[in-house]
Image (cartoon, rainbow, N blue to C red):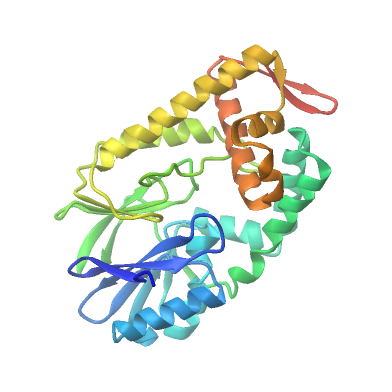
Length: 328
């Protein structure tokens, strides 16, 4: 059986909390302090995740009541989902940014129907078949029970300091992967809790946001150039294993997107006219029709790349009666 937790440095433990999709687990971090511990990103609320937490706490001889605070790097359910559940058990405050919290309310709060309508309209605009559209909406609805109960949230802001593990950390803003996402940097030891903005071996998802007009890929790449200037000795990511050479990895991710932009641009030029759904299946294959979760991520990322090519003036976007096409 795979080890569920691993000590990274003296007071920081990485906990692998399972998720029921291809990423397999999300990294939560236990950071110890004099009075107890902080949890960063407790994971998705599932019976398996709760069982993992109970086992880890037992092995570490900890109890929920020792949790001093719960910090959420961003609003995606695999990071946020257990926050309210852990808060109920521990009584600890939950901290996240206001923008990230508002997004959770848009997704799963009283106005979640607006988000679903915006998603459906986005998919229709980009020529997604009706059955695939409906499957994606159904997949979104499946996450509702995996993020409840909602926590009572206290807002924190990028640029302000925060005390974690008897050290003062800097809160750093990120853009592109999840607006409102933050990272935490400890400048004395040069440790960075980098959430999902920079990941080893895999590239973070960067996709358009239904109902919002943002240059997500442009913002993401600009932000990576800024983050690459940090001096980082150990990066603690949201997925996969902690790693060194943070700046090198940031530039590798930038290069990946530049290559994909070139590939998509050439495809549009060769085909003369394409829609985002056709382009998505050309890049990732038709098998994604059987996996609505992965299809949503792939499609919104392809749209982001097409829109970035339009922003740069390398291709054109044309709105027709039946939706949007892209031309070379």
